[in-house]
Length: 207
Image (cartoon, rainbow, N blue to C red; front, side):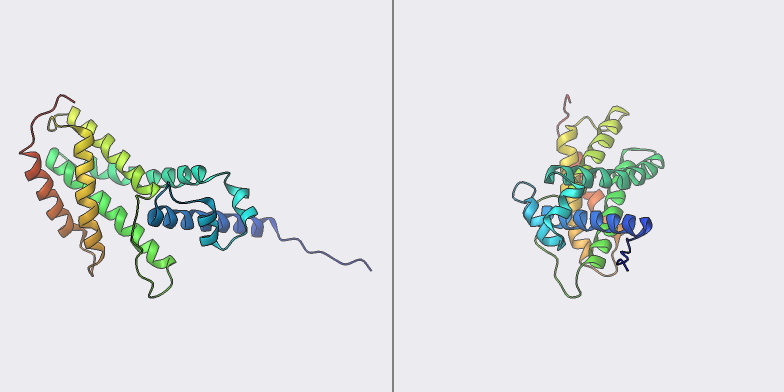
């Protein structure tokens, strides 16, 4: 009697594909953040997943493709959050608060997701570079700042202002994540005050 070979159902195969892709993206997010994009290699990502090298290449051809996938996912998650908070902003200061609150909310959610993936007791790795999601968030915030400046915001360099807002928010956000409970509003109050007072002393720009 011939041996009966049971193949996994289509549903099971799809579930495995989703899990493998997620494992690759989760690993890449951590590797890019810890090592920086330029230093990180596909081998580093594969090693973090525990999957076979061939499995990785079933989903992505290079680390560039992984980076793009993460960036797009970050933008998809963040853009609606930022848009919703911007619509409720009647002036520049309210917009800055909305943008930073949106960023802190995104950061807190990412942190909780990271905690859920990490083994118990493992410390937060030292971050060497921005994750693809954070780069995408910067681009979203910069675009929003340019838009707000064109609508009557301060006439300052949008690149520098976006960089300053993100730098302040990122550093304050790191401290925010170390406190329990996480106080996004208190952190935002501090960051917004720092940004708004700093803008008042800037020379106007032709950008």
